[in-house]
Image 1 (cartoon, rainbow, N blue to C red):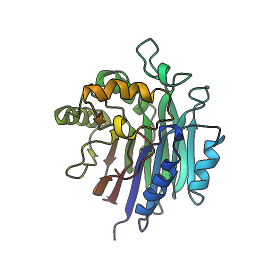
Image 2: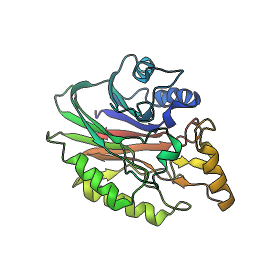
Image 3: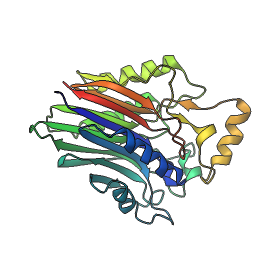
Length: 278
């Protein structure tokens, strides 16, 4: 009987709103009865309430092994990534992707320091001794697809070890300038798949669910700059419902995928999937 894998990716908007932790509990419930689990998070951030985000998240997954990349520079109070799994960890690769500087970088108006973006990639060993690599990526919001493709190429250049199965997921920040465009979505997906290489497929969203982020309706009011976002977007009638979060897999068969619109607390919604090992 084939084994089932659960994978999720969720940008928690720096943990400003404690509702994200309720959302994480809902994600965990969906993983029950699966053999292997991979939980991936972007924008982990040390706050006054949670001074050690590593410790906070490890307490949410006490039985799982955690991989963290809390960026060493003081950026957004050490913004970073976290991944968790119940499998044996073999090795980790962390790749920093410096942000674009300049007056048009929106992060300078949101954060006291510009964020650093990157990926944490972890290779795990399955009980049958085969290996699986999961990459948890966070790409910068600004820059077109040409710029993002360069970043992904840079990430992939660090992968030296061959594995049997692969998952590449996270917040790719494939942002359009206006309302959601299905045509643009398909173009983004095709370019990602071409970059990742032969054998990779996209985990398709269920019918009727086309976006994974909604800045207007779901952003935390405690976030500096949120009021500015609303003043700009609401009069224009732009929801900014975008497909920012993705799950790509290789040698794995998707059997279930969903965007959890009832999970609030961030400007992103959790993206979850179940996979069968081929």
